[in-house]
Length: 94
Image (cartoon, rainbow, N blue to C red; front, side):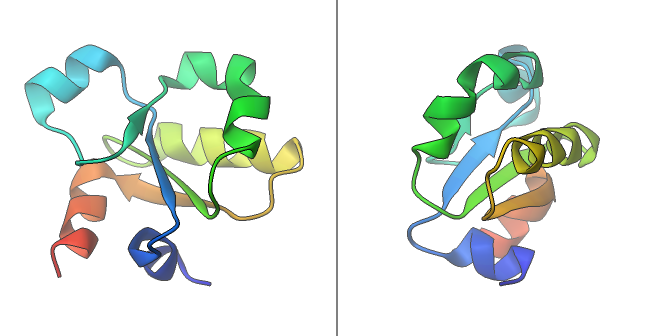
C-alpha cells in the first residue's frame, strides 16, 4: 500500500502530530486526531488499537516521520508518514 492509498483508505486513522495552536493558526484536516509528537510515546497502545492503516502528518513531514518511525519500532506495521497537512488535504480533495 502506498501512502496515497493509505490516506484514501476509508478505514485509515489520520493523526496530526502538530501542537494544538498550529491547528488553530495553520488549519487542520477534518476527522484527523491531534496527538502532539511529544505525547506519542505515552499513547502507543492507544494508537496500536486504532483502525489501520495509521497515517501521521504534521506541518512539513519531519515530525510525522519521527512518529511513524517510533511506532514502527514499537511493532505497528501499517503506519505511514503522510508528510505535511497540506499534502494530506490535497490527496483527500482529489
